[in-house]
Amino acid sequence: MRIINIGSRVVNNYIIETHIGYVVIDTGYAGGYNNFLKRLTRSGIDKTDIKFVFITHVHDDHVGFLNELLRDTDATLILHRESPKRLLKGRNELIGGCPNLLAKLFVKSMSIVGKGKHEFPVAEVNNYDKLVLWTGNNQFFRELGVELDIISLPGHTSDSIGLLTGDGDLMCGDACMNNFPSIKRNIIWIENLDDYRKSWNTMIQSSAHTIYPSHGSPFPKKDLIRYSSYLEKIRIQ
Image (cartoon, rainbow, N blue to C red):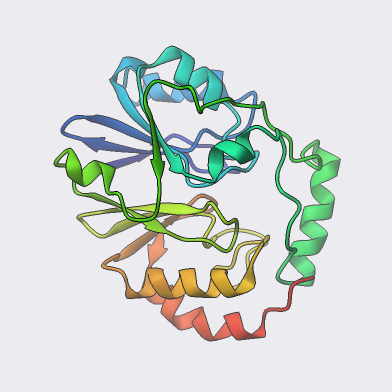
């Protein structure tokens, strides 16, 4: 399957091309919709060809223009069953903390660039006509004949999920990270450390070959294996 990234330097915005339409992975920060449409056009994709919107988890940098994209397309929305409740809050859950001091300093510095409140537009999706809530075992894409598997990746948030292609490409959301200030591919915020460690094991044990994080460049799964021992050293700040 062809994977296109039309995101920014800050957050990736992957699109998967399937034989029944495009799958958009997450919807960036609020205010980013116009740039999204411009990049979509440059990639030769019409927004009417977007058939699915897949949300890896509800955070401000992943659901910012969800309302606008659903308004302008006839896409099916796929997300974790806990996500609708989080979407109604309009801001990130302040549960957990940072895995190291560098991450903690970075999170604090986000207020300088106007991202410190971690807010996003409230989205009421429970009444959306084309809503698919992932319960933990229903494989929506497989039922449509598309080689995409939804996998559970909690830890960063309790509603974190990923999408694994038949080619071994894993869109993991924020289950890991590959740019500053990440250390050894770890994300900068963890709600539940035990779940986070288990999700790394899930990714390692999966059929994935390449990991596509929401922040930073794709990298081989062997990096997760290489750095997995570091997880035991993490203490939430």
